[in-house]
Length: 78
Image 1 (tube, helix red, strand yellow):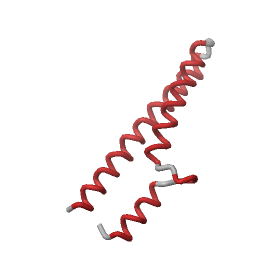
Image 2 (cartoon, one colour):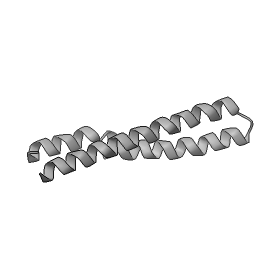
Image 3 (cartoon, rainbow, N blue to C red):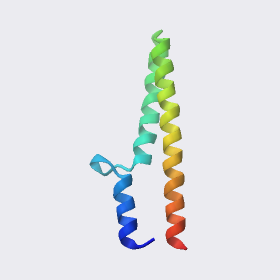
Image 4 (cartoon, one colour):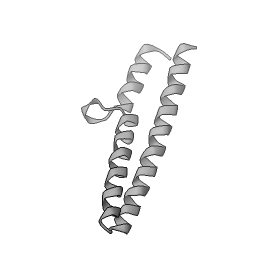
């Protein structure tokens, strides 16, 4: 991949504050897990469930972004 295309790809993966989408999703997954635990400890089962689902979604996005980034890096080396 040409340097300009690589730079563009990096900018696309970064959101506000320069945080990569993969990192943001991983951070959200961690927070969601912690919040789900707090909700369940306080008898808020439905909220705990919803936050658990948010965690699963965030983890899936983080994996997908990580795989896409790895694929882009491999393509750049070829």
